Length: 202
Image 1 (cartoon, one colour):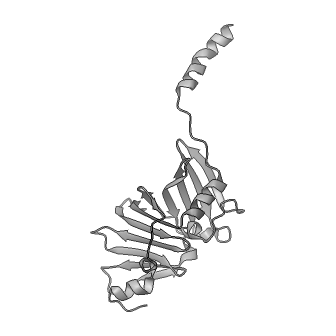
Image 2 (image 1 turned 135 degrees about the horizontal axis):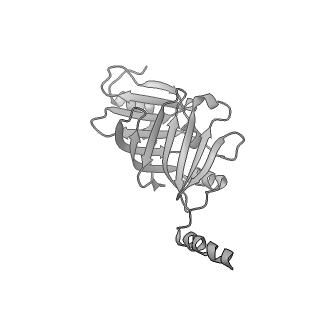
Image 3 (image 1 turned 90 degrees about the vertical axis):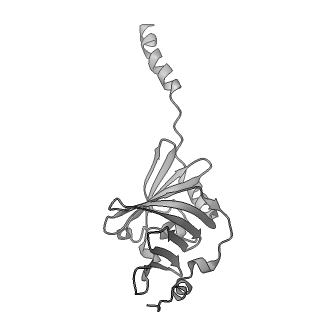
């Protein structure tokens, strides 16, 4: 009897605490990303040096993304045609370019996302009301990793953290995602964007 009485306060406390959300299954997250053909959102970016920038993000899967940074940041980042281009309006040269496959962001821009693929997910945890999934390219883990943070159900992408091949971390915190809206392919056309800025293509 005394044993049951001693356990009672602990039981009452447990019942009073909010129930933590269950960890979202990888298959459900993969389905959500695959269904996201287009998306638009305001974002806040926290860079590795602690600096903060804001802007508007556009996604058109597969393979295309656009980061428009708010003033005074004079930058624009595009991904399209398997290439990432970084435009700096303070520079007199053309954009810096590199293959999309070398950035961990290519994982969610793939034509088909399968987080159950062997060695793709290196971490999958629940933290309060969010689920965090750490991913990498199974064939090239040296390219870095991408941590995706979701709420749900229903599943919604809230932020990601890119750790590049040098170990630098960039966090992108998303506002409300507007999914399924029409987005022109021209938003992600690197050559067109370069011609519109009056720069010669590198």
